[in-house]
Length: 289
Image (cartoon, rainbow, N blue to C red; front, top):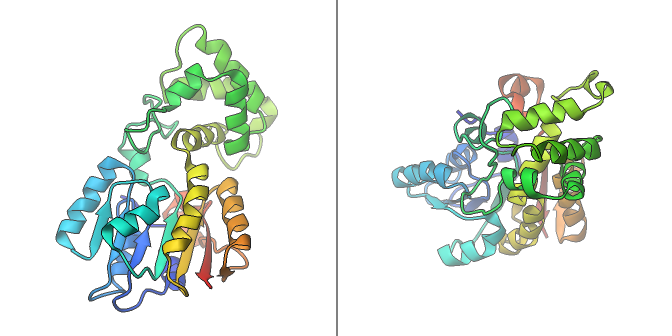
């Protein structure tokens, strides 16, 4: 079951009120959507955008039960077009929760986790032609190293990329287990000392981000989101990666917004103990001028 991250803090900064409309750009299984709907009745709606077809099917079921949910299976990079198509105005608040849904690890069988032995897919949307298998088995060594360094901040990117290219010449790297073993075998012994996260995490994260164009898509979506937000409306973003955070803060500095979280809001120990996947979350909020 997916647990929405920083749910109370999201409500605190979005401040949903009677009959106001909100957009959840990364609706997932609807945890934040349902929390907002408890506050913005009786006529307020939530436009719930979800790129993954399987998760969208769950949202569609909730839409059938609650007509104040407007579920859309598309990328949030098209937020302005979606809002116009659905005539979803005015918009009082917009949420981006950039963490991936528990479904992707626990149920999707698409190779998001190195804890499971699955095919290297990592796509949020199956219409996306690029897979993790494609990157690992067909990209040039320098391009793999770039991805690991850029999106995973992996110190040993070159070593890992070199080992991947060397071993794929013998046989294709097909599964998460295959890739995890290669990563571990290519790392320096120094890298395994006093680490808060598994050494494989950064590489898997980097490839997932590259497959789905996550950070570039987020960068493209921000100005479009601000455009559809009414003056005085709130934008709340939960980041999990340094690249996301940098893109967001750069945007806020240049945009006509007032940042209302000078320091990021992070989960408390109680939430992290309940949901370990929340540990990297950082929430920022701004108001449109």
